[in-house]
Image 1: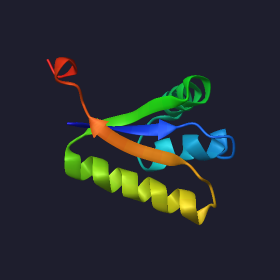
Image 2: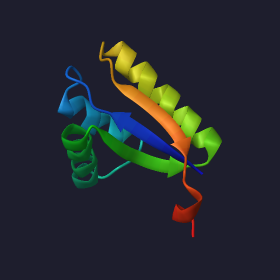
Image 3: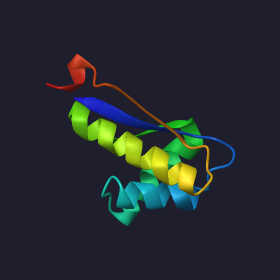
Length: 86
């Protein structure tokens, strides 16, 4: 499993991040807001945990949307730590 991570920046709006979480990651509005606030306050938030193929698809979709809207939103993925899988 892989974590999809959203990174805070000084340009991407909170509204856009929330919208991405709702549309790409299918998060409910309240959950999207909570994740967006985590990104805003701590600099990093987990958008979701997926198989590698799904994570890559969501990363690419988020990057495309950010580029289309001219935001520098950084989205990355990393393996889910083994101890989190139990």
